[in-house]
Length: 594
Image (cartoon, rainbow, N blue to C red; front, side):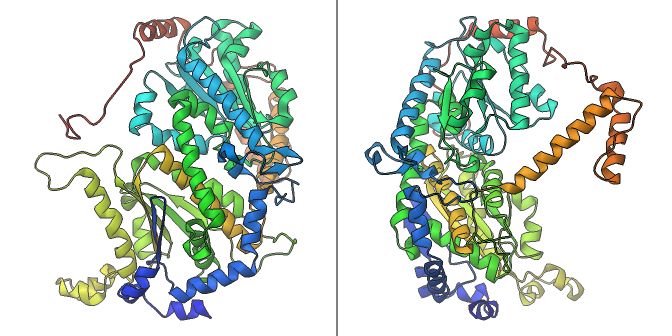
């Protein structure tokens, strides 16, 4: 068996093989993947490619792109790639008889018209003020992807200049503290609320949506036009009636997406397009779509041994199912990618956290890694101790040739970005090579301490290097990881596009809410839950929170935030006294601190 052979080899020796090294990298459209620090030989890749062929990987990829209903448990196509398809692809992809690329571009045109109208001031709020603040209300895939992209664009030069005068905040948690933090210092008269829910029934999102509606009503009254002017919806076509019932103007402010878009794959739909285009302009979002489309074309056509997402997916299968490594970490050496690991957590773990094959057979091989991560070099001072000396965790290092904003400090030999990238290059070598006991002794360490300073090494990683973190490059990264997830699922023969495990907790939470209502309504009667442990916990919670919680007959506090209306008005007056800036340059004096 190949894995048994590999276990006898050490990366310290494999990395000395120049021929091997020169065969274990690939490049496409500026994306450079080096996987020579994986515990593989060239033959391993050939064997994995044969496995992928036996599992009909190419046919499964084609079926996804062509709109076949590969999400069979929900009878749905999986067409997130159509969300970034070019206009010249209209008429090439259909689902249930509908031209999906045509539908996508009609919606993108609608989003562009609306967001440019808001940004220009042509579309204004209920009291006639410019809508400068955007709150995106959503959870899971309706939140993690857009926030990840927002964090990138906040410091990307084009994003910096295009967003001046605007703010974007995300309200995801049902915790009322998240509402307080999100609304703090904002003037409702200048705020546009984007409700993002595929079904328009997600419990946490809809509670927060009703809270935001109440916030608007508290300051501007309950005229139906308040909601029509200050709230928009991103939801599936099948949710239209619910959007209408909520009071949103579905003729102009309803940005539809489709049941063939899974939540964790929805960033390229209106889910991301509306808040990001409001904040940064539609043209910036289009560049993000273009980057994703570049990888889509590469993924759908390149041979397996030259295909970046396929190679990463095959390596994921190798490390999990053959080498037995149950976790994986994403390490972007770019602070602006601080939310990428959280997005990948959902993308990968919600997709491939399964225990049965497509045929309903229980899986008897390891699948579904635990994904986590943190930007470098912060992660080095957090969990790298475990990476170097604890259990083996394969690592994805992501770096950039050029920084979004570099610094050159007087008296320093290297720029700040070079300092960062020195760690990007050093850590994979340290993980691979380790440090032998002889090397430790040679440093004069006492014999009884040598074992504590010895690193076994032989810990796999791969390195992704891109030119610069732009909207385009971010689209490339998104598509790479989306397709890596799909490849692993295709090879494992599981359905990566449903998420029934998420539903069970929702169902139980609904029953618990009934218990809580009973406890609030009948304070003299203890509640009875499904088991003694939950019964005890619920009664403890109810009995100790009676004095701090509204009773069951109260609809809640009408003032959502601690800011008074007068305070908000004064803040708004100060903001409106200043015109929206037209430019900001964070580079200072050619990148030097002044």
